[in-house]
Length: 308
Image (cartoon, rainbow, N blue to C red):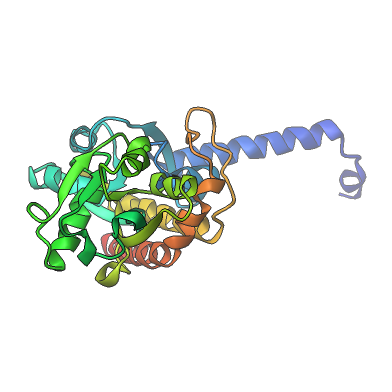
């Protein structure tokens, strides 16, 4: 016994033992981790928590092995990919999801990422400084079916302005919206960050924020949501709970550390600068934390019920 304890330990033996332990741990993780395919748009600012969840290990800590698919098709196509099991879950703007979901896609909304990325800014020179002053004005959008147009049409209606008759909507390429203002072709812009933020940055003192999707009664609501295919929700609530919890934890991290840029791989690196968007995340911090944690709590409860 004494002889065995005094036997010298070789460096090679330590390396072999460490390597064997690493292999065993890796095999155990691969056997236990639930594999999921997650669809997202790598160039969209709203979806920063997705790459953070991947890089900082939030998916792994919650027992998931997630493959990210950069999806640039229409929302209808994205939801169809979920309904047909080509992807297990996805994240995107709620205003683009409503109509396709009404069409009957077997997709369930299970969580959220954050709120506050859609804003409406008015040109001071056109006298657009509040919602009432929008009556009779022309609002520029990057897409006539955009979340900005959909959301602010509702907000206008709630303030007594008919979005179809009292204002005019005009579509322009996103990066030319401020040029349209300079030419007097439009009087306000309804779009999302970081584009609106960059427009304000290029035209200092020209615009004033009229409203956002955190205005008034919407201050604690969200715009970016997480959806999962219906079959997965019905059969594996524990996995869905783990996914929502991962996104919630990553959302918290991004909200609390807006300037910490992820070291995204070339295949997933967004084309915008992380530092440029720090202001955008600071704006939506409170809503991000409240909404994401609420969703994570709800799905954790469902996980407990499913395990009972």
